[in-house]
Amino acid sequence: MVFYECVVTTRNTANFAQLHNLVKTISHKVVSSGGIVRSVQNHGVRDLPHRFKAKYADREGNRYYKKGRFFSIYYDSNPLTQKEVDGILKMDEQVLRNTHLKARNKLWYVNIAREDKNPYIQRVMKMEGADTETSS
Image (cartoon, rainbow, N blue to C red; front, side, top):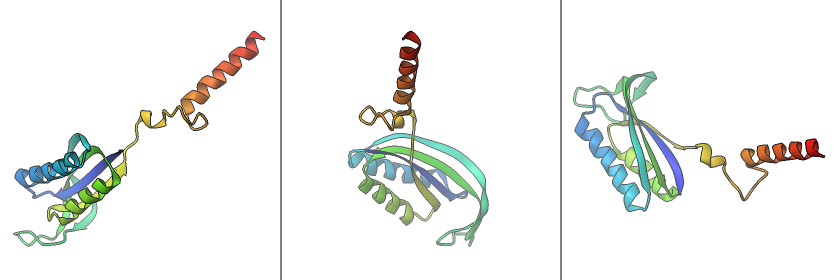
């Protein structure tokens, strides 16, 4: 399983029920496919770097947005589930943009099988080499 971060930008006019339903749908898809949803973080309404265009106009006729609501979903799943989540986001009218990232943490680099790729093991090996030189 791969640890993904999905950053979603939605319309700032979307109400709570629509966003709640979107997050719930994504979470059910991940869990039903054998994945784990680690967290959902709301980043609030922010100014967009440039004017975003929605696929369809809303009730008031707005199609261009200068502000958007950002939130992130962190989950573990296989790549097929990630593509299904991407499809769900593309079909939703409230979503302006979305980005999937492979989230990395400190444990990403802990790999005992490949000592040449592990910076922590290399540091310990250098320290042990320095200790043997000083003791000889």
